[in-house]
Length: 45
Image (cartoon, rainbow, N blue to C red; front, side, top):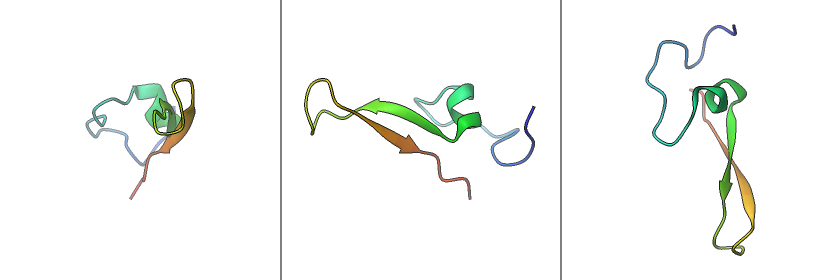
């Protein structure tokens, strides 16, 4: 398991544990169209 970052913190709403470990998630981007997706990155400060 990776250490540091979000380990031990509450997972942000809408994110899975796997998303947090990757540092990003795919989200539906309705501004660009009904089947468009974009990457939402986790700022690990």
